[in-house]
Length: 285
Ligand code: OGA
Ligand code: FE
Image (cartoon, rainbow, N blue to C red; front, side):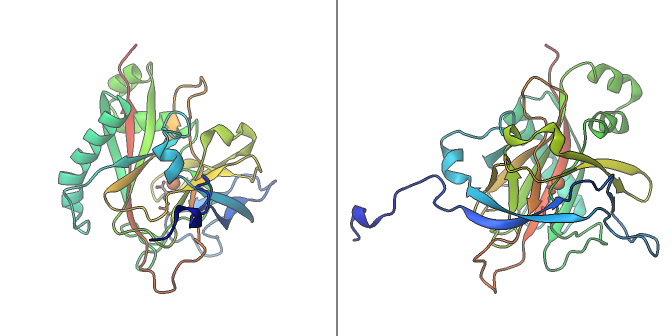
């Protein structure tokens, strides 16, 4: 047995890594990102990137100490096992995974109503940006909605009457992100919402075939504090705050991106994950 003295000190950043994250370069105007093959001559993504070296800390010790929550840091780890083990069947996802996710989101947040509005499967080997049913990881620092497009989602997915009522009270958008196998390559980096400044946000177009959504790109800011959960497992999931109507210091969004984890074994399996997006409505207070 090794002696205790052989152990290095248990510092919170013992497993911190350094990696490059793709921020947006400053002064790029309004970037445009396509979700399908753009017309000839149009790039998939516009706006020059500024790959920036950052420290990404192991979130596990701090998560165990209760440091993170959806409303403080904008992300949270949850222990949760799904009854679904084959995510290749879309109808199983909708019939089994959606109700599980709805219950999980309600329990974790105190929301009284949860409306799941889409999901995305990703595979770093078989997925591609051109394939809506199996995408690749996203290597750009972003948040999926903006302060403008968040409320629009309520009108998109509820009747006009209900939307009018619900928009009077607190609502939000949260992603539930789950690995389909232990994550070794391309883990998700999460930025503590408390370290994001409004000046970092750049509204960006996300072009679908039938509409244009709005997301945030981010310019680099040395204040950003980045975390990841090493070797995230399928019986764990991440909750990511994407929008919150509250504006009282509650986390309203989280910058996030996939990154090339250093020291990843060359033969590490592909990263496979599913994320779903949900509107949350809290009870009137
Ligand atoms: C998300 C997201 C990217 C990825 O869940 O919102 O941006 O690589 N995911 O999993
Ligand atoms: Fe995202």
